Length: 53
Figure 1 (spheres, rainbow, N blue to C red):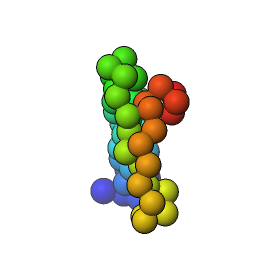
Figure 2 (cartoon, rainbow, N blue to C red; figure 1 turned 60 degrees about the vertical axis):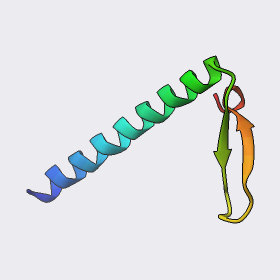
Figure 3 (tube, rainbow, N blue to C red; figure 1 turned 180 degrees about the vertical axis):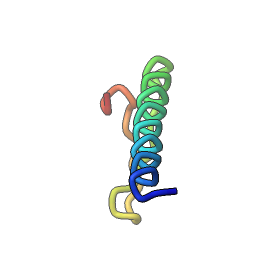
């Protein structure tokens, strides 16, 4: 694989992950579910999925 092909592949992966995350948040928001997050690796929070959209 050339360097350009590797970069294009990585961009496609990142775009696919963005789409998957958005769909997950939308589905959880429809069901009124929370997302569990940790921004610093120590503190764990529950945030309603609707709030993240």
